[in-house]
Length: 215
Length: 287
Ligand code: SF4
Ligand code: SF4
Image (cartoon, rainbow over all chains, first blue to last red; front, top):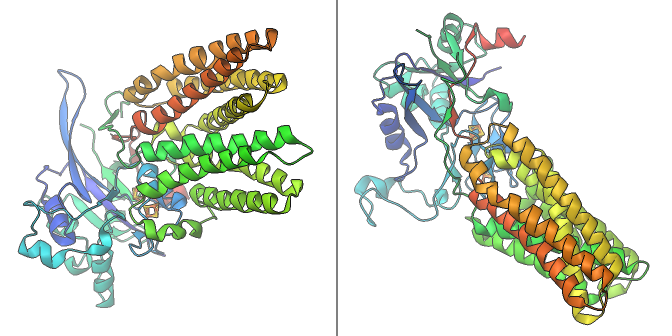
């Protein structure tokens, strides 16, 4: 069995948003849509205030509420744990968006471009009519993972089989891999560090782990 | 980890569902309960045509509003694909059943078909409550007590609307009025239960603030006023105005509450740092 997850090391993330940019570049998401984003978090109370950066996005939950509520079966889950959306089936009801506790889903009603009404050359090439009026979110770059696997590459190790955000991270804060493989990079990180998951109390079993070593 | 230090942040208002979704809960809730009460009060005969048509019109209007909100309206039939777990799919099936049974009842005159439509209408109301509860991203909706409240307020609205429509044709039915007053009390109790649960939960402050007007609405305008006016109508049955006032006072706060709940009080969960740091491989912990 395989379960792909992401490990975000909050001790390492410097908030540079390179992953955000890499995701936007790879997936050609329109303005206002960020499948991957990094929150700038201030915590504690004066004078004991700390600042950290927290990458967020679809957590590829094991028990995804978005899939449970989806009336059209557009939202699905692969055997490797990646939560998917079939743009050809989705009716754009946004029920998944209100069911997702991680604010990971977006719906864009009309084409939007970075510089006004006219798309740039890249945007014109990358524009996908199928994504208008339907739900969209991070895919864990599943196409890239699949293409890499087909070439015998290892997701999380070989960049051509690894999500763009993890590849791009300048601080090596994002690590992708198979949780079920005890020798994988993510398994090692989770064994050797303290970690938490977001909103665990909701029973979603998120596939996004945050490393945090309290000082 | 210290929970105070690692509290929730980044709560914002959901922008996915707007007044059109609220209109479905308002129209569907009132219409389905209207159909139910029309069936119950007509027993053993069939409910009157005008009541059935009014109920269907309200349900239809609510569904039309939802249809206007979805991003791919011409794929609307895909809503039927997931009855295994989706309460939205179940609502759609039950709505279709209500319409089919009602049309068949009108065409054949068979009261049994009309009763079945009435029973399906109750199921429709329940589906609406479950739709909200399943939305785990919105604390005000996922609170389990919301199901009871949505059913309770729907019943009040349907009963009151039937009373209003009946008063246009004939004298007020005191039994109906009595039932309305009991339902109004049940709704007030459901609201207090829901509110207590919400206040005890980790719902955002903005959600609590947004729902504050419902306290006055459902208890004062929506319960005390109908009880006073309804009581006066029972003592003075020839004065229709008291009964009408009781019915209007019962309906409007329910609609207002649902509008608030679906639009203004629908703050998302927000983000959070976990309040429990763990050590060791997650699968080793699970085993
Ligand atoms: S994070 Fe949200 S969109 Fe992603 S799988 Fe979980 S519930 Fe679904
Ligand atoms: S918007 Fe699409 S993916 Fe989301 S619940 Fe509706 S049909 Fe399913």
